[in-house]
Length: 114
Length: 113
Image (cartoon, rainbow over all chains, first blue to last red; front, top):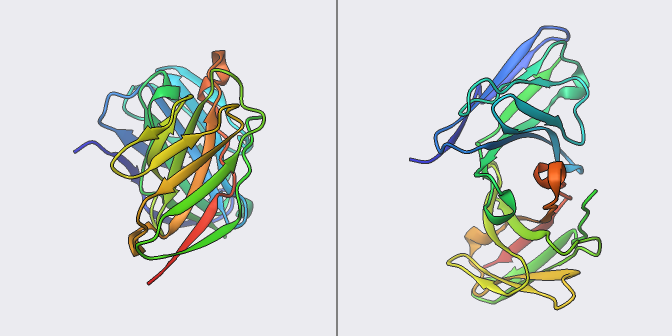
């Protein structure tokens, strides 16, 4: 089954404790991206990657890092999480030339930073 | 940034057609128009996209204005399972910005039985 998977689905952590949210897709997609969703603010893009070793900032990249060492994986790293990073996070992927194809979203990761 | 404008909420009755509008006045000639929806407690899912011509698929129809500054997502017969937040975005298709997406707050569609 074609899918985007995220782990963990739920995470409660404390301020300053480094964490990684993994994202993996099995569709051989070139493009992958991370979004956060907060009440009243809609979906906001954090980072995106056009292919292996090619990443760029979205609209809200502060406090986050990403890497794309393999085509199928695009982990989101929070080096020193803060409470304002409490949010619902979605990973998405699509084939290249994205204007002509839709994004496939993962199920989401709900992160709480205390 | 590529911005779209949608009503915050709309309401429909089951079995009736729904027309969800979107304004994208800053769209450029090569941008695609995409629609996604997000059911409660789920990730967004792709619905439909188009460039200039109207488009149909098994989920919905997309009507694009001649000047491309607005579009309408049409659900021909709304069901309770169509209750969701619907997002309209346009895909800048030039260089590095091709992969940057800006989602707005979307339209919350309520379907009454």
